[in-house]
Amino acid sequence: MDENRPNVSSGKQRDKVEKVVTGGVRQKKKSGVSRLGGMIVPGDLDSAASYILQDVLIPTIQRALYEMVCNGLGMLLGQAPRTSKSSPNGARVSYRAYYDQKNDRRDYNSSKTRTAYSYDDVIFDRVADAEEVLWRMEELLERFDSVSVADLLDMAGLPANYTDNKYGWTDLSMARVESVMGGYRIRLPRATTL
Image (cartoon, rainbow, N blue to C red; front, side, top):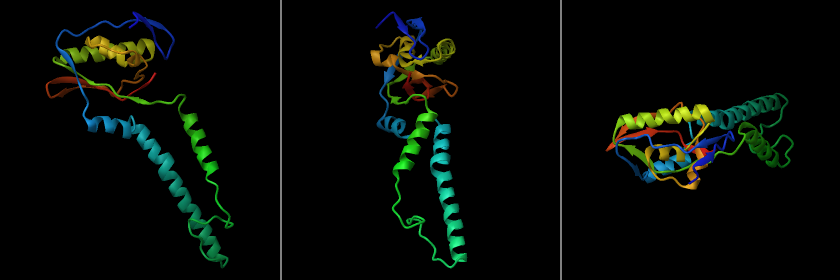
């Protein structure tokens, strides 16, 4: 691994991070449930709530209101109520425009596509070591706008591979140290593309 590596998000050069732990550290494979949950569940609650509200609830309410108004006016004028599957003039509905509009909105909301990256949990024997690593990660984030999985592994004294430099975090506000069986770990949001 390079001694000097670029910070992918800001373009600044920075030195390789040194080991900061004094106690024992090991990696533990994530369980199948944890890996699957990380792939299915959105990265954070805010994005899940936003998706449900903007892409599910609001369009559903809009369609229901539209149907109620159209059917109410139609019944006042003596027409039979429409079913939700028919279009106003009986023609076929093109869903292509809806699909394109949804993709345009998704591209507008995120400047670059974020994909999840799975790595093994880092288990610290001492809570002080886990807290020190988290503190140093926050410090790197403040200086360079991102911190990578490789930075985490380097601070823990564990081997990192080239791909670990391309994934990490730009927000650690929800990160915390927690007790697990056999030690302590830093509970981090999903690592995404930097």
